[in-house]
Image 1 (cartoon, rainbow, N blue to C red):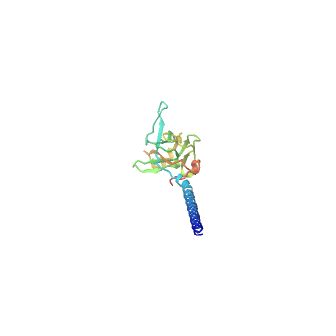
Image 2 (image 1 turned 90 degrees about the vertical axis):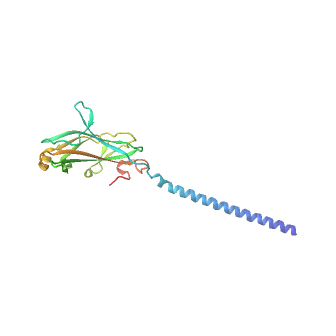
Image 3 (image 1 turned 30 degrees about the vertical axis):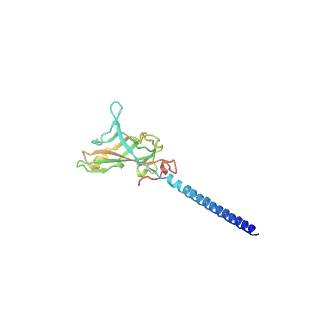
Length: 205
């Protein structure tokens, strides 16, 4: 009989050990599942992070007498009447990431004393082509519809400017000079929720 009790006690001990091992295994599996769940929940947030700087270069060129593109002068005297100027505005992606691009054009008249004045209401632009669109005509931004890859140069945003020089001279006097300014902006196109440039997240205000 004592031998039977000893055997029963040993069997009971083994059973308890198996139950403990099983319980520990279940706990480990549950903990691993929770860890995987946390990683899965965090991954979409991590994917939306953008790394690296946005690097772009905006250029304004004109056509010389041979029809070749050359850098446009930054200023010049305005004649009397309506003047058309060849001005070609492009943006180049000089960084390492594909970008959504937008550009804003500003036109200024500078009086004889050197004081600049906004004159956007005195000009109209020849839009290059349908590669650029507007979301809100009143804010002055043009948006490039296609993603601009690294080292790629955009299609022209505009190809010319018509200036009401008579109104400029009447407003600011003789000897007025002009200045066209093109400001370029970019946000990384990778991991955006939409491939629509108008819905891109991260545009500066």
